Amino acid sequence: MKGKLLLIGFGPGSFEHITHRARQAIEESDVIIGYNTYVDLIRPLLTGQEIVRTGMTEEVSRAVEAVKQAELGKKVAVISSGDAGVYGMAGLVYEVLIEKGWTAAEGVEVETIPGISAINSCASLLGAPVMHDACTISLSDHLTPWSTIIGRVEAAARADFVIALYNPRSGRRTRQIVETQRMLLRYRSPQTPVGLVKSAYRERQEVVLTTLAEMLEHEIGMLTTVIIGNSATFVYDGLMITPRGYQRKYTLHSAEQSLKPHERLRKEAEPWALEQDEGQPAGWGEAWPTGRGEMQPAGKGAAHLMGCGDAYRIRQGEAQLLEGDDTHSAERSATRPASTSPLELAEEALFKLVYSRGQPAPNLLAAEALAPAGRPVADASGRPAWTPPMQAGAQELIFEVAVSPGVANKKMSPAQLLTLAQIAGEQGELEYTPHHYMILRVPTGDPSGVTERLVAEGFRVQAVGDVVTVKACDFCNGEKTEAIPYAEELHRKLAGAKMPKELHIAVNGCGMACYRASHEDIGIIYRKGKFDLFLGAKTTGSNAHTAQRVAEGIEPERIVETIESIVRQYRERGHPNERFFKFFKRVKNVEGFEHKEVPVAVADAAVCGD
Image 1: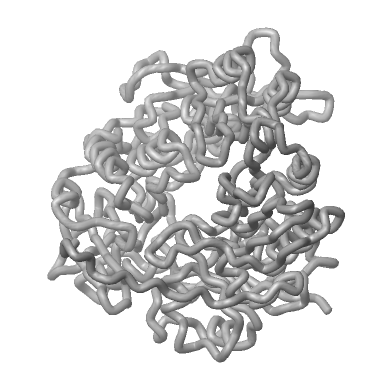
Image 2: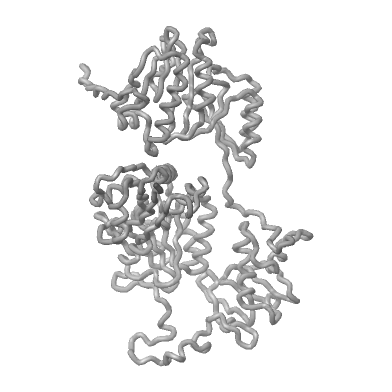
């Protein structure tokens, strides 16, 4: 039986703004998967469904778990506030499906259920600030380089968009909103209206109307959406309004209009429109904003793009880039072939701004203006053969890997240390961990080459993150060797395997257990020729405890397959971000080993009073 994924946007959080279809989808689901806060917001709608809830930054785990549950034949609701397709979970779920080779015809069914995004809910509380062209920009640089984000802010500011800022500031990200304000003030008046809306349509809703110059004097956090007006936005009676432009052609204070309906679409009534008139687009003689709060005469036939500082002249069918400021000289006037349309001119002017960031050129005429001399701009099929190099701000790839001298071996040679230093170089870093390995992080486009070099130097390498880590004592510097082959085999079969949460397996080579294997998720202690097994330690918190001893005297030939089976069950049945001790407590039985409640320790007051 095929399962189904329901990607649900439930709006700002109030029940009045959850769509009927979203309610239906939640009610018909077998499993609800979402961020902790979102699960709490819709809890009154739940009717006994299985709940998988995780914290912030665990979006990938939620998406992977949702796909896994749907592939088991369940109806799975993946919930997002606002709209699931606007900074929500919809795109990520599709990415996970695509990685698995999913197709709509043969894979699980997917339905995306739209909701009210923050730009809409917050705008409704402010008045009508998004009546004209607008854009959304997230200021979170966890997934997108900051140079890319601030470039988008500048582009939106130049183009006079109303801008809605999502994720404007968090406890650690404080500079981004400051830099954004500084950039916007280069193109907008300090008195530009700004609306700050926190927790729209929730219990702690707050709405503040301020200006671009004073916006940082108010509280702005992750629950705040910032809406910044354009050059026409104004404030009236506590409301933020952005005109659509009706006042240009309509008399708003009178029912009698100066222009009749059939006259309103004539060229003389809209000189700004992109229409050809005697070989020139109408309105090219109009004034255009320069991006500095001024109006710049465009000049007859000048190919000028809203203060971008770049212009093109078309002469004898050839595109030529002209660098400079926002002024226009006779040299920049265009003698345009009759075959060149205004749309083509606009594409050519946009080319440098958009396509020099690494995208294929849609217009080979413009591509020739930027391609290196002698470099073909198209292949035999007509597709672009040259793409301009990525500019500053392209995302750098960081390769991260765990490195150790071995499972039982704890000693690195000077040559190995030198190799690590050489690979890390000036840009990389090495982090020592309490699990007897180093984490190497290095910017590189050749991770396999780095791995091959490490292995050739005698290192063990494995993935880091939510994976299996196998560690062991040094077996008394190799004097007690009986358990080493089993530790090596466990490392070979399990180390680096993807898990719901990081999973630590520790091996002690004798009953002294000086390596404290019983303090890990899975502890194995070799004693009197057999193995004792410990499961589910909790290493931190006021109720920290050692693992439970669930078995004694496991025969050596059974220990590896037993651990493999335990790990497999955790991988298949564990919830995203669920630590092993929580999983063991929830499922009660793993591979026949029963969970027992750990007594809660009560600390008596010390004699000294501390």
